[in-house]
Image (cartoon, rainbow, N blue to C red; front, side, top):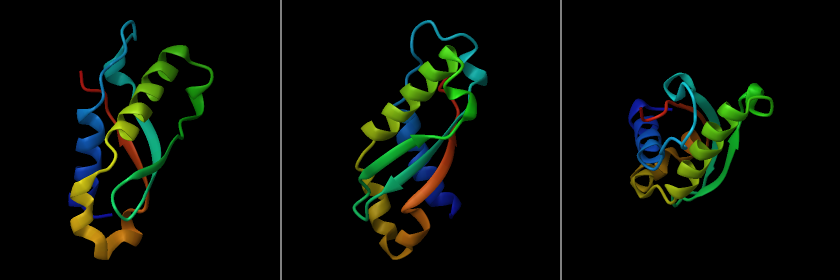
Length: 100
């Protein structure tokens, strides 16, 4: 995945992300999400991949808010100009750092 395409996806997701109230140590909670995208930049699925997701309520709140931010970013219209490289970005795994 090119750095430019990766930056487009990450910035769209992170710009929609706000830290839920009451989450402790939010700055250290990095969320890994597998994103499936349509050719038009529409987010078809966003799956949280972190293993401690189920056990840690604090992390779960952050991960779910990150997932919602990725879904809210849909469609990521800037990806359309990279249509020739669609196979590179149709299914990507990305890490998101909280906006704190």
